[in-house]
Length: 177
Image (cartoon, rainbow, N blue to C red; front, side):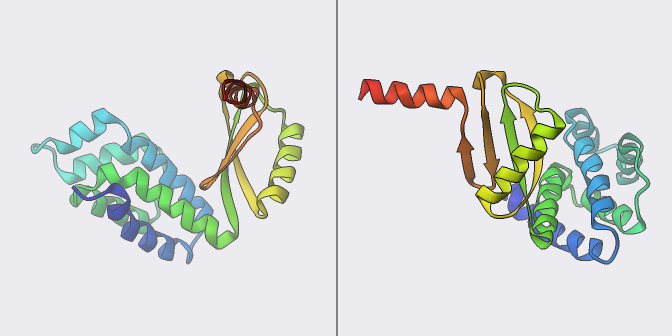
């Protein structure tokens, strides 16, 4: 089977071209809800059942997503279901966000922290990271206690690791070399 990214790319590009004529941010939120529903293994098993119609899968997905979908998004979801591309939907949404962020000059930043970050601290961290990476960042914080302290930031294919765990690993390598 083809890579999900390869399957998702044309869908994401078409979605983005239509979303630009409407509200990209609202479409992104609706697509996030649909992608979350599409990741459910039970739903995918239901959709793969030959006795279930595409319209039944559509009804279950829209009910689970709890979103008022624009007519264009309704058509998109029906096309994805009818073409048996439900497994690719999360990747379609991810690529849609990449296109939207690139057009807005924004990049996603995944911040892993050992401890919760207060809103004021987060804004300071984001300001510093934006200077470091040279672009506006959309931050998503994930708690990862194994870091012991500090943060690890992933922006695209760049990683900035200032965690205690990383420092200890560097010390270990230096001492055993």
